[in-house]
Image (tube, rainbow, N blue to C red):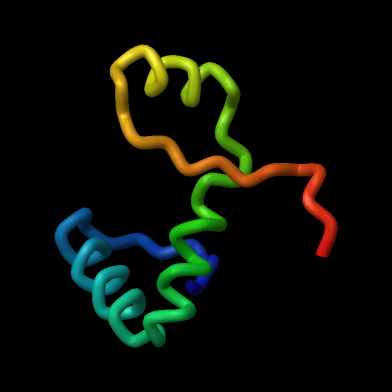
Length: 64
């Protein structure tokens, strides 16, 4: 995804982001999805846990 700053309406931005996302391969989409969880605060996960939501967490101690 492109990190440049743009001045556009929300509707135009959504169409552009969707087009860019759909241009990715399925494997790249999965990687993007998993990376989207990085940087979230533990408070977000705790709030989700209290609602009985399905949670995917990346362990930090996994050796490759």
